[in-house]
Length: 529
Image (tube, rainbow, N blue to C red; front, side, top):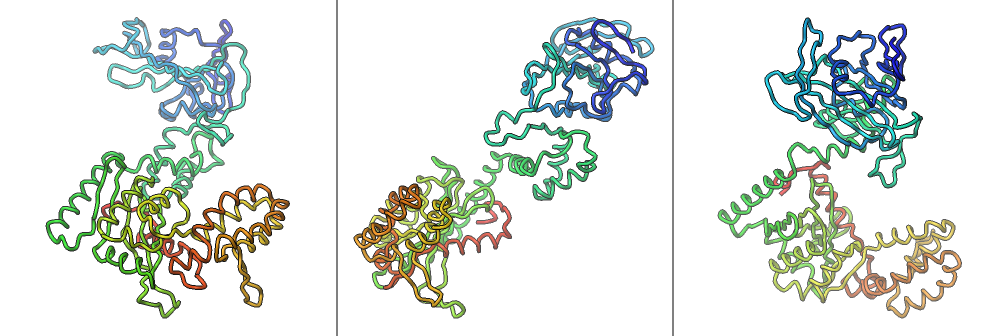
């Protein structure tokens, strides 16, 4: 052990001090160390006892460490469990070094920048300021030979406080808005292993396998040497899907254009790809056979017997959304359930779901099904605004219907604070069956807006006492209920008299069929088409 100034340099194995499980090379301030002094330290032949075989972690004192890079990858050194750091510079200086019997004899700086040369050595120092304690600076230094190898296979890590050293709590990541958990940077080698395991496993499975491969949580020497959580694996899988999004998009578009041209020149009467657009919206695709478009006219326009056209997006089919149009075949009845079978109509495939995208979809339907714009009897949605607005503008004469199930869930959500009265209010709105099977009508069964207003006024005062916030919300929904949900509206839409309730179950059933067909896995767009 050598003491000089305010520093203690440990050389005798019996005198070595430790920070956690890591041997300290120098205890004290080393911020003033010159480049030449650091090179002398890095080029010296050190005893194994002073070399760190593991990443120093949670260092919150003035101390310096020599890390054996045969055991700890250089890029892992930044994951030290002190949270995030701000990078403040990585200068590389050029030196001429001369050795005699592997001992450094001469050290001369050639340039404060990197200059390539036959016998040039390069000292790199990476400076970082700790985000959780800005007065702590970390410096990682290493020297490379003219051939690119790291001198001695060691790196020097220096931790120096600007003033008095002190302990500090690690803060959450700067990008975290809700999560207040202290941020832990994951070692690069761990992320590489996790990425490899993600190739043939789900994020959960890859996270578990990576932890096992690294010896398990109980054997972890630092938090940074293990995967952070399953969300990290999920984000990694999303960001690194194998090929870049740009090249993938080009391949997808090229494949789709080839398929469309093959259809056009081989059999134009059996076209399936009706539209491909990439501007101004992201990739946009409309699929539909001639029969599917004709069936919309046949089943959704009759004043006597008509099916409600239903639209509801489904997700998780690759990196795009699938929005099928559905209706019922009114000429057939299932023997098993006594219902009309559900038919899939035209399909929208897109990378986002905006009003412009839905409007283009509606226009494509109108183009391939002349007369539908003015003759459509009724359409229904789950209340998605962009979709509903586009359908209303595209089919101005059609009756709008709102899914009863989705609105019931909205009502229950706004009644969470009144558990005791939730069932009573819900029954008053939607009706209910008694234990004897007798149905008591609700407000949505009213035959006119006036009857609905009368029923609402009879209960509104009681509701205000139980939950005034719900009444305020419900007041904003009464125009929609009168226009899209009442009994007289559903009768006009062709749902019978007394009318059946409208649900988007047909679309959701179709969505389930689509997902089941693909085994609930992501598939490429050309393969799906």
